[in-house]
Every structure is written in C-alpha cells, then in structure tokens.
Length: 397
Image (cartoon, rainbow, N blue to C red; front, side):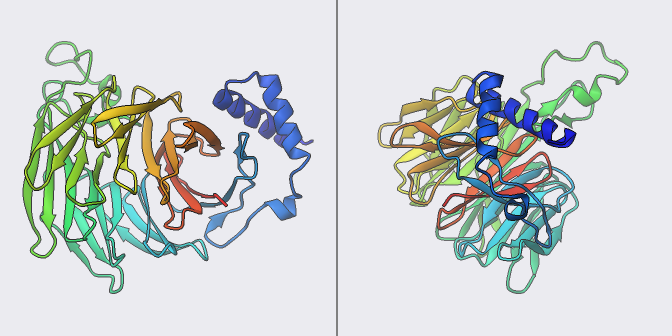
C-alpha cells in the first residue's frame, strides 16, 4: 500500500472509530475487511463532467452497501442549503454568493444565480416552477425556472435565515434576525456555525472596557408571510431576545408554521388561522433544525444540545430523544415515506429507522460541518451540503 493509501486507511479508521465509538484497532480491522470486498479502482471511481472523481464512501455497519454516488464541485464557500425539484431531476444548492441548479443526470451546473451576499436558503415551490433564494443581506429572490426571470421581493435590512413555501404555493415564509447591538458598537462577526461570534473581534482595541464574556441576546427574529400574488408581506411574529437559525417550515396541511426563537430552547408552532402559538419545550440548548413528517403527525427537532427530539403533534409531547452526534444537529429531514430520518451535524450524517429508533447508517465523507440534508422525491437519494464547499449525493437503494 502506498503512503497515501495508508494515510487514507488510517483516516478512515479514525472517522469510523469516532462515529461508532469503537477501538481504533477494531475500526482498522473493519476498514481492511471492507477493502477486501471492494471493487477495483476502475470500477469504484466515478468521473463525470462537473463532478469530482470520488471513491465509495465509508459507511458504518449495518448498511455497508450504501455509497456516495458523486460529489458536486462548484461552490467556493460553505453550502448552506440543498433542495430537490419536485420532479427529482434537478437539485438546487445555496452557498457562497450563488444559488445553483444541477442536472442530476449529467451532474452539471445548468444555471447560476449570483447574489450580492451569502445565499443562506433555497426552496422550490410545490409545482417546481419557482426557486426562492434568500441571502444574508435581506434579499429574497424568486427565480422563474422556465424563463430565467428573477424577481426580488422588497428588501429587508436584516440578516435572512430561511425561506419556505406553503404546500399550496401561494405563500412564502421568511425568517430574519435583527441584531440590536453588539459589544458596544463593535461590528458583528459570525462563526462557522452561523451564530454571532466574538472570534473576529478579539484583536480589536478595547475602547469601551472589556469585551462581553458572551454574545448578548439583544436580537429579534421576525417571521414574515409573503402573498406571492401581490408581493406583499405581513409580519406573523416578532420574537425578541432570539436568534432564529435555519428553522422554518410549514406543516403538510399548510395550517401551521414551525419556527424556533432560538435562545429560549423551544420550537414554536403558529396556527396561521388563529395566530395561536404552541411552544414545545424540552431541549437544553438552541434548536438548529426542524422538519415535519410527511403525514403531519410528528415533528423532529435538532439542537445544539446534541440531540434530536421527536414530538407527537397531537399531544405536544416528546416521544423519543435520539443522540446521534458529537456536535450541533444542524439539519434533519424525513424520507418521503416517513420511515427514515436523516440527521446532519458537525461530525457526520446518520440515517435512523423510526420504527426502531436505531441508526441504520453513518455516512462519512464530508470533512467539515454538514449544514443541510434533503431526500429526493422518490426517497432513493440523499443530498448533503457542507462547510467543506461540496455537495454529496448518497444512493439509498
């Protein structure tokens, strides 16, 4: 084995040992065992225009046949959001200052929408005719796929976090965060996890005394509902002392919107007909992600407390707590049949059998934070976007 091959083998073993919490020697044994049953390099590597040549991903037992189909290369900074077109043939990704459409048959970028600031969220309308792209400077762009026409909704002065279409496609929800003040006038810096950070200001002169020991909670999250027929917005909620992350989603019925204020550690369900708010409490830290099950009976929430909770929406009670990761759970997604949950974190991606509450696969391949996950409409592919500037497509069989 070459030196490069040996290093790759050791790295794979370290990742597997950390993911499965097994001894390093046992991880090495499993890696070597898999290598003995792995196709030749000519069979294993995938090379297509617009995509990197990649090997089969290392996946922990018991689903050793799960593979990475391809790595999509093109973004120059973290990929914050991924979304499948309803027909399953196109993938949208948001990262750096671009939103991109990928033809999944050729793995080529077909169109690039360039923004003035980081693109933080992308979402297809239910009929697939429009892509909404939100950037961190407060602009929501509506991209008509057939014509290429781009319409910008009236700008917001605040930092956008997420966008989501209602199931009937008539309404777009957006969440944005306004920072009231920061360190007595010092500029805002955002860390690798997307939260306000002190890291970029530690070397600044202290003109007004010492820097605060923690990020102040003087932020406000605003949720807007946009009538797409008129382009007008109404404020659904304005939540003080909060920092809303990428937590925004409509219930499949369209009657309820889920949003997380952030610092109060709850997920809030807003009844869009009555305005009544139901808060689900149980996490011990910020909620970073949420998703409704396809049948609308369950809500999954991922948190910085390193857990995922499953909530029975009929009772408002948590029915299960999953502990999938060693870091923030930044994204969660249900498979179209509702049987599988994908969870993404700072260390890996995992698939869960919801009938048993057990992990069925650990997907190892990304080298930094995994920000987003999405299942294809047929449930056969999982897309993941990462801080490492790549998008990976995982074949689920």
